[in-house]
Length: 102
Image 1 (cartoon, one colour):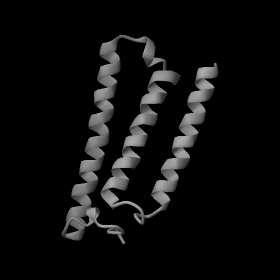
Image 2 (cartoon, one colour):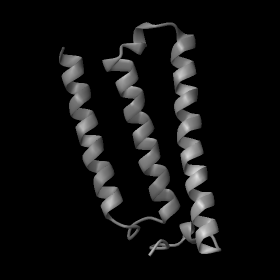
Image 3 (spheres, helix red, strand yellow):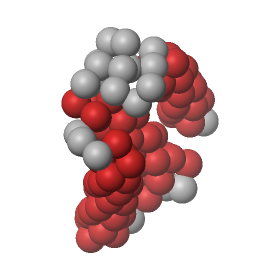
Image 4 (cartoon, one colour):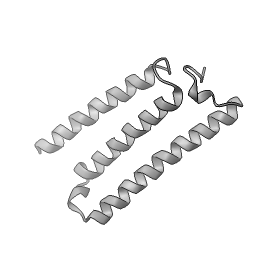
């Protein structure tokens, strides 16, 4: 039970960190870096939930690898769709600029 409580505390801390990065509204980082960081943290959180709360860590290595690949493909796809959509909407790669989405 202590492992689940520690995992939950880490997930809450990561949620707060993600919210603070998102609240910066691209003042600190270019938008593409900010979006990638948020998606990477979300992928890490999903992996922690799968491994600890759904007990995927006790299954075979094949299942863990399958879910890890799925999370990477899902996060990469969301980021790629976001980059393509924002680039098409702005007519240029505004994602590399600081505050490019205003």
